[in-house]
Length: 311
Image (cartoon, rainbow, N blue to C red):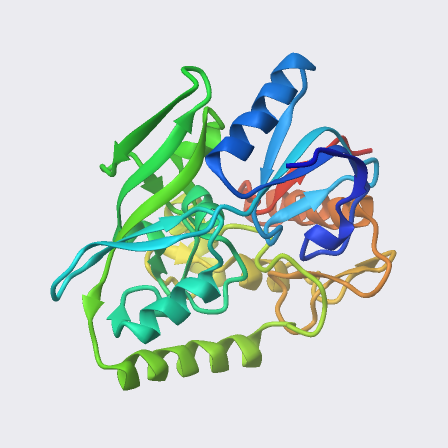
């Protein structure tokens, strides 16, 4: 494994934005990962484990630490039967897992089809769509405990996952693999679900421009005052109010800063029209948060994660 210097991160993110990583490497095995971590420790250096870059905004100034690109990949059937269990390495892309499931007539992940993420990234964020998240089929997670420098297994409990969050966001461990539970299903039904979610994404999302999907988490209805809920009459789905709808109600749809724009197709997305800078995107994010405080008296929480120093 080679540790490289001054590598542009722009091509490793879905925003196509960002400066250089001071150091960069790709870890295909646990041994590679250990080598990278040893290098970071010896040089007293911050690390960042990168999946597919679909939920990060990299600073224009780059990142002064070591970026470890997770390329650890395997899928193994650990339990067979009508409800088989798969162990899936954290560097496996969702599309790769869906292909495996189709070949083996396994249902459980197809509702999330279209999310451009690795399994590790999805576990880290508890990625979801259509009221469904990967945490619902996760039973166990194998991690590298950074404090103990030891591989451990975590059995899922009620504290492991929340809405677009997990215990792993404390960054005290690196996700190595996840044990996911599936069920046998006819391929025609799996393909039908994939077609449905793909159609919805194409119709509602600005897929022709670089973006990281939804910038903000949806907001629990309980966070709003009774007066605002009655005045605005928000549609409430699964006890949540759509972040995109709120941004639209703030009158921010289509607003630009440089080459960054709050999408006219889906206000929950910020898109790169060509040469957007990270600070342009941050400007729009901060504007949305400020307007949400003023108009709705709520605090909006980002789904996107920041890497490097801004402003």
